[in-house]
Length: 258
Image 1 (cartoon, one colour):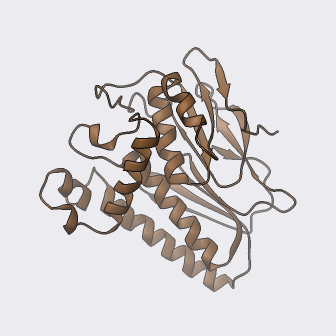
Image 2 (cartoon, rainbow, N blue to C red; image 1 turned 90 degrees about the vertical axis):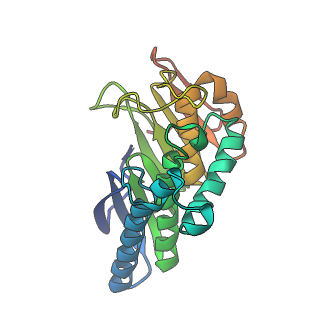
C-alpha cells in the first residue's frame, strides 16, 4: 500500500524486521528530536522482540516451543496470551474464517501479530509526542493523527496484477490491512481444510484496530464472498475486495479518494 501526497515528511526510518520492512513516516511531533529518536529506538527494539517471540520460523522462539508443546501457556511471555486472546476474538467475529488453531503444526497467530505489533508501535510513538505519522509493515498500516488540513491519510491499494498501478486510494483514519496471494503466492490456507485458498485476489479491511483489521483481511482473503457480509456488518469496519475475475466490491462506508 502507498501513501499519496500526505504532506512533507519531517522524519523517516525503515526497519527490517518480521520478514518485511516497517517504514515510519512522521509529519509532525511536539517532542524534542532526541526524545523522538529514543522513542523510535524503543519501538524498533519492541518490533524485534515481537519477531523473536512470535516467529514460527525460529525454532527457539517461545511460540515455536509452544506449538511443539515444550512449554505451557503459563510459561511463555505475556505478549503471547495477549495476542492469542485477540486471535480468539478475531476467530469469533469472522465466523471461523480466521482460525490460528486450524493451521498445520499448531497455533499460528501470524495473521494478526504483525498488525498488533505495528498498532502497539503507533501507540508508543503517539505517547512520546508524535502528532501525525504513518507506519507501514508490508501492507499493515497504522496512522497517527492526519496530515495538516485533512482528517484522514490517503492510502493507495496495490493492484493485484499490475505492479505499477493502484487499484484505488482509500481514506484511512486509524488502520488498514490488505491481504492476498499476488505477492507471496498461495500462502493463505482455508481453515476448514488447510488447503490454499483461491477465493480472492486482494482483500482490504479498515477499522479502529490494526490487529483486528489484519486478521479480518486474512479472513476475507480466504473466505471471499462467504465471509463478506459478516465482516462489513461489524461496527466501524469497512472493506474492499477484488475477486479473481477482476470484479470489485466495496462496503457502503468505505471512502475512495483521489
